[in-house]
Image (cartoon, rainbow, N blue to C red; front, top):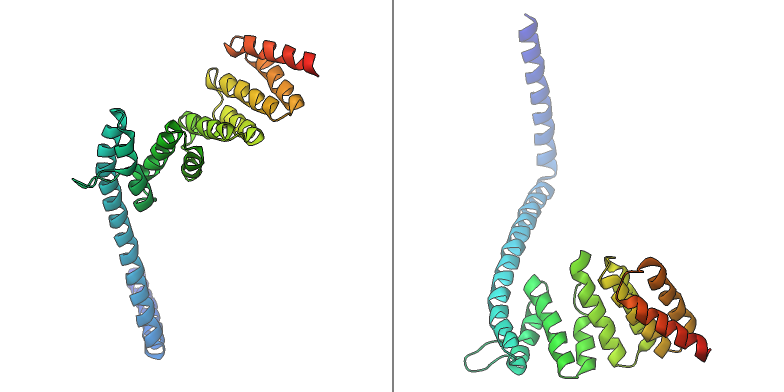
Length: 227
């Protein structure tokens, strides 16, 4: 008997909520339909964007492969600007046309490297500033490269800060002392000797077994004489 009562109560609840929904629907039909259409469109847009993003990534990866081949064989002009006959876009076109893809981001980095090799440091800087650096140890070299570009442009204090960023990006026994010594050299060139000495002390104290220790000691001695 209690089971029948439970079933009857469940039915009553369902009937009550159904009645409420029907009443709401009749009085707000336009809102309900509009909301439903909006929800469907939103889902369709999300799915469409995901599919489009995958297609963009696939296209960019294919195009990047040819540009990378030119880069590896030392044909830097073709790697950077591509080829008209047959049509093969270079790093610039890939970076500009596929900016939200991983391949487009990598093309941005390649473009900065090629411009650096050609001595076009302003152009190299404009591309490295657009590059999204990866997390972890893989990001150390691009940040250090960014610092090297700034150094070539005689923006030594900025270069020092960027080398410090590279040193602390993912600290390790090899790259960290290297970037620290480069930071110290940059700050010395910028006339910030005190900052240079602080960094040199850090190398000597924290990385006593690194190859950079002897250079740090030599540079520190030179700064002491000149001060």
